[in-house]
Image (cartoon, rainbow, N blue to C red):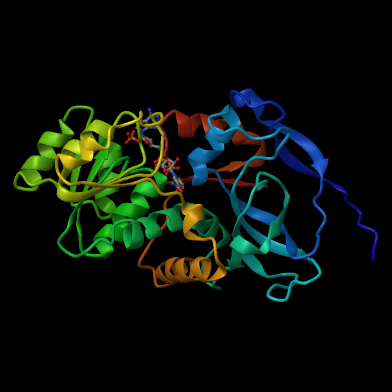
Length: 331
Ligand code: NDP
């Protein structure tokens, strides 16, 4: 055993869920390694993927016991290895999904952590892990996208949205993206969206109908929620699939199952964590995602890297719909 010089660290702490003021920069006890865990010195911390989840956690849409350190993902260097850990050593570069990542150090249990391939940066890894896995599981399992499909992606210039556009295009689909501004439209186009609908001045259902010859889309991927739900139902084709994976505009209100019978629609509401319960599942999806990144088949757009102490601006920008791609924090 050795004496550690520092027993505290900088962290963002929420003592009471609420507005941006709930995010406090504090000196906080540095996590100690325990059996079957590692401690990671964070180099890059993801704000969104569960990005939006971070804002839900802060504001109380999803309730958590306080005080807590927000954040669900990060990438960094292993600085301590607990008893029982054989797959990691001090110095390894890793990315992980774990709570309490808005901090200098995070204790990570072994379920959702893996080494980063050599030529993938900390930033790319931190930016890709949650949103990338969310997007990839959605297009491979939620609705296995096929060549020639028409797929509608809402918030196409968002973090998950840009990845969905690239992945669907990679799989050979015709991607239709929805966005609120021309700048976002440009970005969505650059990431694989063949058609982009600016819903600020275009009717989405009507445009989808024109583009698809009146048939609608094979799949609609909707992370916006309350405000897009009706459009999603209108835009899907007979026998098509609607995947509702987020609530950026609010939670989708309860629906009658009979609604689905109008076109024999399949409806899914996935959460990434139910896809990565076993080590086999996690390794499969991680391996496929990082394979795409390594082969440069997928690129991650980082909107901006904020300092940890500027986390309030990051949340403000995200909620203000000002962002495209992924938000990161650094120490
Ligand atoms: P985004 O970068 O996509 O940001 C949200 C975007 O949604 C905005 O930029 C905006 O784009 C659009 N939007 C439309 N209406 C609103 C509104 N009222 N308020 C805010 N935004 C609105 O965020 P993320 O990529 O981080 O996340 C996308 C979604 O994916 C979220 O709902 C998130 O919760 C979900 N998610 C789900 C996971 C899962 O496991 N199910 C995992 C990770 C994320 P525009 O201006 O173009 O309309």
